[in-house]
Image (spheres, rainbow, N blue to C red):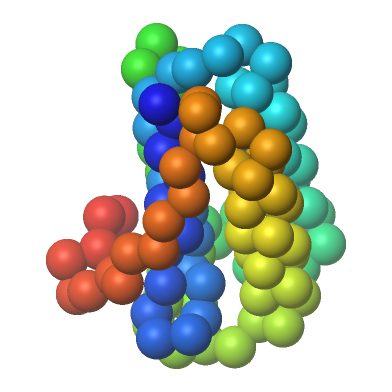
Length: 113
């Protein structure tokens, strides 16, 4: 099962983590969603390239975090895009619950960098 973890500090989404492989069509949808979110945040917000990304294509793993948002800086554009990501991820989960699980995780000072 593919797991999408929405990383939050309080009510603010700081990033997301995706792990595992599943049905190829579902993986393609989640991959397109995550890549377009990262690209939009980079191109359309003041975050620019000030984010952390870790990937392992063989394991179907993607970690995306905006450290400045985690540290409490408000970025309304990035917030909107991350909320849209969460909404879309939950929509995929609704349609393909056999293959996808979306969960929230409160991030702590032990955040990956």
